Length: 292
Image 1 (cartoon, rainbow, N blue to C red):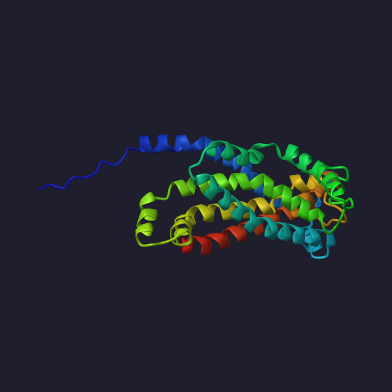
Image 2 (cartoon, rainbow, N blue to C red):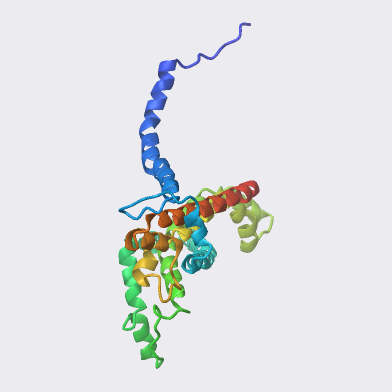
């Protein structure tokens, strides 16, 4: 019996396929690859919008003694630690709640997701008013007989305010991602667990969480990257103060580049931030993907 050989696609067909991906490839090259390379080149200069000269690794050496950079790095890590797990936990809890069938489920889904589609500027200004000296929160505290609290100007409370505002903005987005993962879990798995006598907690830990592993892995990486790139809330609510207690790496990039005119040093900070994100993403893929 003669063998049947699959006909290979012609060279013209292969070239047509490359043409389809060419536009996205050009966009990625122009807006991602070239800017990254150019930023790395600029990080080795003292470019200040008027003059430029090659300084090698001087900008990176300066970071080792820059107290503001060290403070920004610590604030970025602290912000990530304070928002990462709570945002995932709240998002998963909301998804579990919305996944149940009850009257008005669509309305609650829209309400919880609404903060994410709001403008970051609008949301930050709203929380800025809530935490202000004459804001709703202080009015409520004074109405209960308490003293007015300087939320945004207190070094011990300012980061807490940014964390609360950020959680309010991102939890709805993570809820939608977890909800899509929950709805993809086959119902027969829960039915089989019920037949075996499993209660709600056993179903959650033995069925829901393992089946949500790919979604959790994606959300975790997304949350890490977003946390390390936080800027808008800091810029609008506190401006990095008081005393640089809320400044972050992204905030320092903006200040050095557009206020101090030190584009070379700002580019060096951007390269460090990119390397940190790449390392965290690689670690997540190494351990998270393996467990998945």
